[in-house]
Image (cartoon, rainbow, N blue to C red; front, side, top):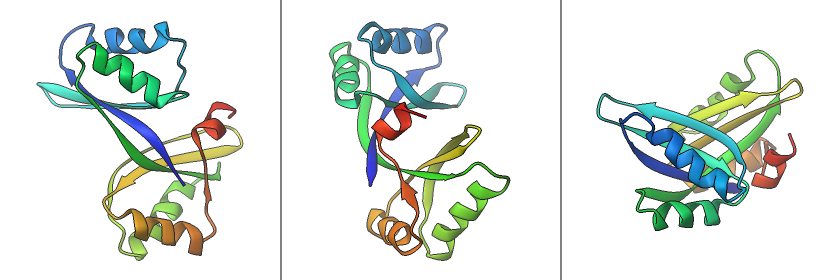
Length: 141
């Protein structure tokens, strides 16, 4: 029900993002989803890849500060307001969302989020019959 995400600490330095993405690309690992949040001094790159364990090991072997964690990925219809409606289900159940990012194709929306209460999130997904997706599902969108 969860997928692996890599979070990378980024120095706010010209070319650093390119360097990290290049290391992953050199190993023929595809990035399926990504987001960057930043401050004036540093940023956090969050990525989902076709081979998260290998990508994580590559980053660590190059002395890049990274960690691997579990996030939820929910498939939604690609229609206006659907992400808000889906998040509302978790909010009404008292599940706090630490962060989220999303994207939409012509036919599907994908909502990726992390919470500090995985059991409660799983209960919402089951109760509301939400469609969760895997890294493999993401790679064929």
